[in-house]
Length: 63
Image (cartoon, rainbow, N blue to C red; front, top):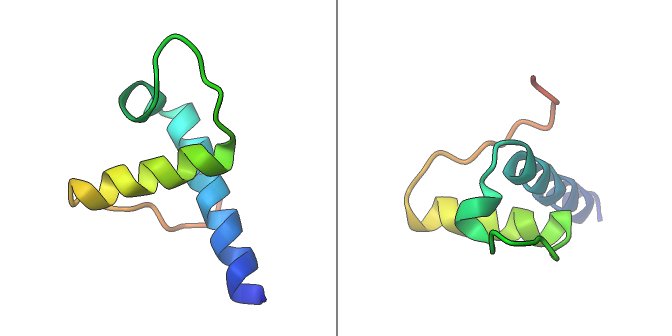
């Protein structure tokens, strides 16, 4: 149960990164955003895995 909770939080964190760092223009439509942070995080993770980019894994908020 703890592993599932940590995975959920990590995917939400990736969604926040996607929104904050303007990855949404690459992984989602540009005229509007109708995805949750979870869906954005999953799409960003898929994008990183497909292009062999480094995946952020820290659970600490860094500005």
